[in-house]
Length: 257
Image (cartoon, rainbow, N blue to C red; front, side, top):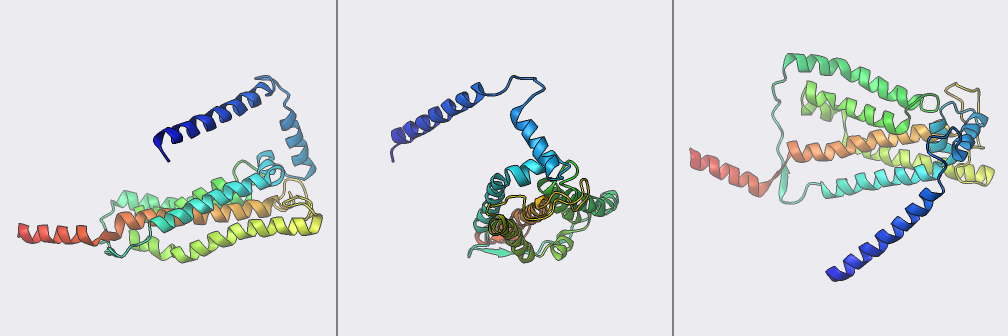
């Protein structure tokens, strides 16, 4: 494909996208108004299904199929990074030496770690009740583990981060979201419809029908995906060494002697 053809494709696609955006913006409700057709329906649907957090109701009920797409994008992105960052034949692992950590950094990192981890799990568990949810809580929980890297050393992080286990858990969480949708399809005739389980008592952890299940699946998937993603980049920065570069460094050291 020539450069001219590529430019024409980009220009045509961009013009089509711009036309669709303009058409959509022309039909938006008035800016700053107190009435919004979609917002009113979202709040009504959230309350009718006993979901206190309207945002969670939108993400895991009204547009749960769209959330499945976002989940799939994250899963595919992490899978691509794992493939690209895998150890190649001309690389080997060099075990890093523990670095000296300043006592205040060690003290506060290890002190904040359990608090941050519990905060992430709390945000996931209460996603259908309060601001937050699986996406936000998963990121908090995953990054909390990496405070071990700051407060201790890389070996301590590796002991609580067996990458294979997190990769399997990532796949299980993504599958759990799909299985819940299929169960709704078989039970109610509609994929991801929030009519399979009782809606429970409003503003309790068991309320919202399938919303807590989908939210928990997303939280688990995001947490495991972030751990696997950071593991790939940290391995490249800390452990994996190019043999040609390593030989060159050794040769330079010998010459320096």
